[in-house]
Length: 111
Image (tube, rainbow, N blue to C red; front, top):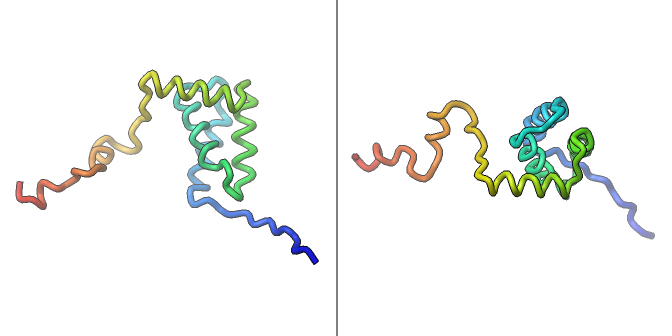
């Protein structure tokens, strides 16, 4: 006798943060570069993820509202990155500068 397929939806660890980001995207009528980049990265994050159907549906809805297909989104975001786009730092600049391979090594090395 065959075993019935079991649907196991997982909760992504970044669900709450991504829910907020997608809600912001849904409120945008004409997307700026950062909106397009956010949408593309979220599509990539949830592609193949076994869960979060509401996030996936709302991302697709944002694209429909913007009149874009997934292919068009990816073409545009590739061009945005090629043109030198870099995301704005999260939080304050001092906190962003404190991230990296050389952070606070001068104090440890006696410099």
